[in-house]
Structures are given as C-alpha cells and as structure tokens.
Length: 194
Image (cartoon, rainbow, N blue to C red; front, side, top):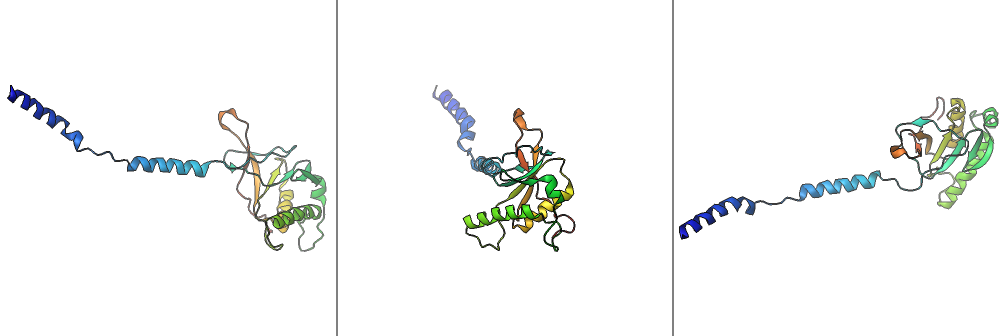
C-alpha cells in the first residue's frame, strides 16, 4: 500500500512541478498601463472650448486639434474682436492703409488688436516690443475672400500676435454630439507678406 501511495505522490509532484517554477512577469503589463496613461494624459482636452462667434458659419474640416480659449477675431458681417464689434467687413475690405510701407494694414482693426495685445503684455509683464504669446484665432465665415484674409493676417502680425490660427468646424463628430470649433494649422504667410 505504501508503494502505491508513494507512486501517486510522485506522479502528482511531477504534474505540478511545472507550476512551482513558473514566474509571473508583470513588467510588460506595467509598461502597457504606463503607455495607456501617458497617451490618455497627452491627448486629453484641457480647458474650455472656444465659442463660435455669432453670425459666423465656420468652414468644415475632418482633422484638427481642439480649440481652446484664446483671443478670437470673428469675421462675418462685422469684424468682432473678443465679442466686441470693431467695424463692418465691407468697411475693412475697402479701408486704405495709413502706412505706405504696409499697404495691407487695416488701421481701425490694427488699433483695436494693438490695444488688446498691449493689455495682454501688461498682464503678463512683457515688454511692449515683445510679441504677444497668447494665440489669436480667426473665425472667418466660409464665404470670406482670401484677399481680406491676407489683410487681416498682416494687420494681426503687425499688432504683435505671433500665433495665428484659423478655426473650422469639425465634421463627423462622434456620438452625435454637436461639433466643436477646432483649430486648423497656422496658415502660411500670404504672398508678399513678411
């Protein structure tokens, strides 16, 4: 009887021997979780979405980064800066520059944007000759002419804003949610503008 019991014990020990020497390696699992957390944190939206200016129908795009709070120039029937009417769009298109070296400059818009830039510089304790580090987004109606856009961008650059973007409406929003305003890549400088 002892021999049978010993034989069974040896067989059982041989069967379960492989479980005694197995190690559970958690390093790949931890690496995977760290990667998931990293990508979740770097791709999460931070801040409030920029509101769309009233009366502006944004062009649509399928790709773009989320737009955050920033100084917004609305170009619809009127030019609005941070929700305040500056001038009519037709008036801006027909305005004549008061600087012969800068023929694209829109004087009334320049004064308003320069005042906004100066207040931002003052709030951030930045010298008056330094560029404004807060981004400015142009929410232009999809029917806006490119020559007006070139004049707007030149006026904004001359007022000290270095980070200019064009906002579009994202199409194909997930879960049927209302599409948010998105920021397209910063536009290239128009021909002849430096």
